[in-house]
Length: 328
Image (cartoon, rainbow, N blue to C red; front, side, top):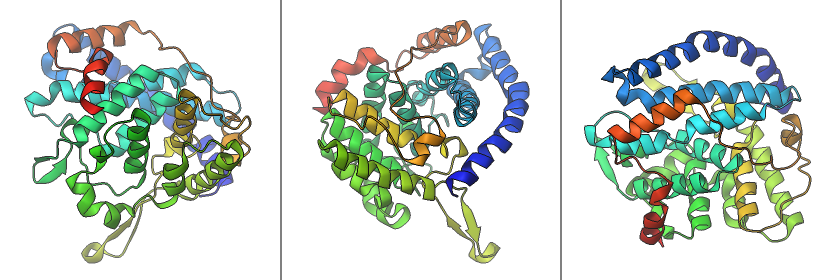
């Protein structure tokens, strides 16, 4: 897709989707959460999934508002808040051997969202938990999994590319992301780093002009790779072609690029003062968005408290000193 096609898609498809799911999904999920708080334990294994569903609703509402020129930062903040606990919750409930795992690509997009809104401690926690899970090399149901991180075999280059950058940011063991499944399938299925390679190698580039050129190339790649999966052939010889940016919520919202800018900011590196690529202009992100506050919500606050009481192994930012020591 090109940028004009992306803009048209967002402005025509998102409003109908949003109306439909705000009527159906939001009320249903909130009702299920309240039932769980009131004692219905049939929902406990689904809390992380419920929150991620609502996160997608908030994210699409934000993206639509941004493309239309009036970004609703409150909806961006809520999307990040609802996305952030997914991996900690999956870790907390793993001992029940449930299907609570979060997929690797979904996790990395969520981590990028958490970074974009400027939540440094949460970003560090999620990054370190992901490295911890990747090192498990667990095998479940005949497929490679990273424990609560979900399936490690990926058809995309960006999850490993971004996690290598995160590992570098955290100064963690560089071997943390070199999992058994990566060794076997990464180049074949995901094609290695692809168009992210220069960003991986030079995300710390101190020359802001040189870095801006690198970011522009990555933005070109983002646009070119924003598409639904396509299939060719018939049932007997069906072939899938994957694109790096398949979830439509991210086509106009370059969250993977914004996370790099945030990490550079945290590292004290100068960022471009003005992002002139049309991808950033379309979403009114001419510069890195200002950090937002964690949005309060009585229902979600209560659900988080109960989940952590029932599953005390759920990680929190209080675990950061231990994780830092283990990964240094």
